[in-house]
Amino acid sequence: MLLDAATFDKQTIPADLCIIGAGAAGISLACALIDSGLSVLVLEAGRLDFDADTQSLYHGENVSFNHFPLEHTRLRYFGGTTNHWNGMCARFTAFDLAPRPGIPHTGWPLSAETLAAYYPAAEHVCQLGRVAWDDLTGWQHAAGFPALPPMPATIMPGIAHWSPPSRFGEVYRDTLARAANVRVLLGANVQELIADDRAAHVERAEVKCLGGPRCTITAKRFVLALGGMETTRLLLLSQRQQPAGLGNGSGLVGRFYTDHPGIDGLELRLMPSAAPAMRFFLDRIDVGNTGLCGIFQPATALLEQEGLGNHRFTFSTGGEVPPGIDSVRALANVGSDAEARTEVGRHLGNVLADIEDVANLAYKNVAGTKAGPFPTHTGPQSLQVAVCHISAEQFPNPDSRLTLSSERDLFGQPRIRLDWRLQDRDMHTMRRGLTLFGRALATAGIGRLHLPRELAGDFRFLVDYAAHPMGTTRMSADPRQGIVDPDLKVHGIDNLFVASSSVFPTGSWYNPTLTIVALALRLADHLKETPP
Image 1 (cartoon, rainbow, N blue to C red):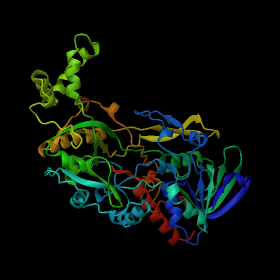
Image 2 (cartoon, one colour; image 1 turned 90 degrees about the horizontal axis):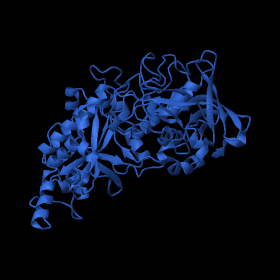
Image 3 (cartoon, rainbow, N blue to C red; image 1 turned 30 degrees about the horizontal axis):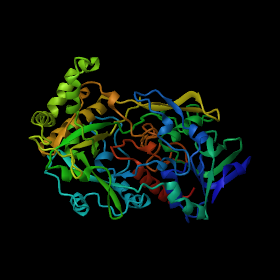
Image 4 (cartoon, helix red, strand yellow; image 1 turned 60 degrees about the horizontal axis):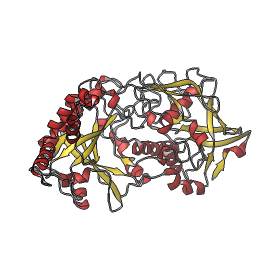
């Protein structure tokens, strides 16, 4: 049933299990518990559609090197952030879950085999269609594209699968509405979790609705599925029994915030012979009932040898005007353009990098012809420029963190405060990764990757975010090293669990949604097998 929390003003609502949050994790978990014999109550802060006042509760303070608005990265209504998810999916590997020599705080307390067992069901939930992760050649053939030239062993072409993308709130709304043992309470903003005197057992959740109504939820077990930021915020707000926040005896709630730092807009000048094959690696391709795209990623041996974080490269179609041509035009006006005079070095570098295009332009202007001596590829069936994007793993950093802000939301509650920090080893991963990838593309005869000069120094101003908050309630076998155990139960609290990317100890380069769903399905099995 789908119900309105405002109609339960001043009431107490019981359940066997209370799931707080109806995004990818909460909806997957609730659907997996249909017909489980458990009375399941799902609390969703928003309603079925976007509402500006509700969304404003996601505003926060961002003091990071990248001051992106926190409310732009998440959506607070039924379906959560899947309402603007792009759908890219990939599986975490054994390398991603293993400890890294010399890198503190790495390693998952789960085996790759344990996680892999839940990926097929998660792929079904995410509507991936036919899945074949390792069949690059087969997918290229099925889509009608030739194979790439042989690549150096340091770089591996591969694929990522795409969800339609599934808007979980739309896809699974009727399923939950029909479920006899599941109730979804809309407009239910959880303000605080109340535990017993020892902070060892959650007794109830206090709920408020915009406009005034309030209610209390009692349950035998609670699952926090509010996403990578709000899960952390709710624990920090729950201070009655533990002043530093519920479950925060280690002091680690909110620490180890990670995202996927990346750099976009890097141009790849393609060789004519490689352009047809590279079309497989541009954006999404649909083959039958399956969406996919080609990706490039470093070989595991290279990552281990160089101590790099995992990362991947994707491409999209680019423009037709090479930077060298724009620079020639700028240099032609250097006498009258003050800005051009200060950028002479950069423009000369662009000219040298795009010398074939510059030579063509000069030849055509002098000879009065439409064609130059070097091949060009600007026709409707050709490809000249591709735009490259790197997305990288961020290593765990306890100083990168979420805390509570002095700013207040519409309920008078402290907003979240983000201080996202990168380490030198994160910057090294991107710098070294791009350098090695550029060499590999040149060696294979695919093209020239233009790297910004700023990579030689501090290039944080070039780094963008992926809106994949992870790590702030990290999973660990040792209560001193994290917040939840391998079964996603909060250390020291017998009935509180977390289903969120916030439990990831490390995040590889992969979009987290598929793994979030896999962990939620594993938690569903644990809850069914373990009596409350």
